[in-house]
Length: 106
Image 1 (cartoon, rainbow, N blue to C red):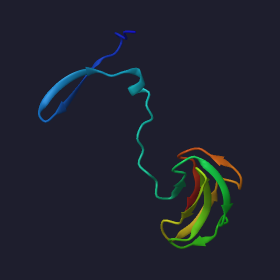
Image 2: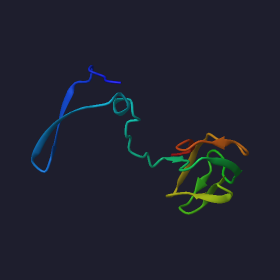
Image 3: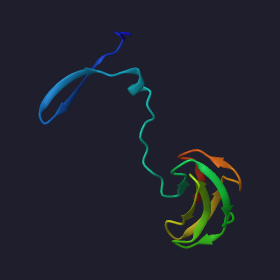
């Protein structure tokens, strides 16, 4: 199937300039966004087996925030730095997809 509605775009590799047509799939891809250090997101899909913190609790770097079971393994998700729990967006037993916001830190 030929899509003639695509415009040509320029790109350059090692001082050589090329023209190409971008596919619809490329244009509709999920755009990159930098990680927010104040968000704890799931890196793989899994099930929340335990939550060790509460909203408003002060936690230190290395403290275990929650347990995420994925691929028959229990993963302890640790606090990346000292802070305070702003919100908990999960519940025990909840299944979460990849990149799901689980905890926000103040």
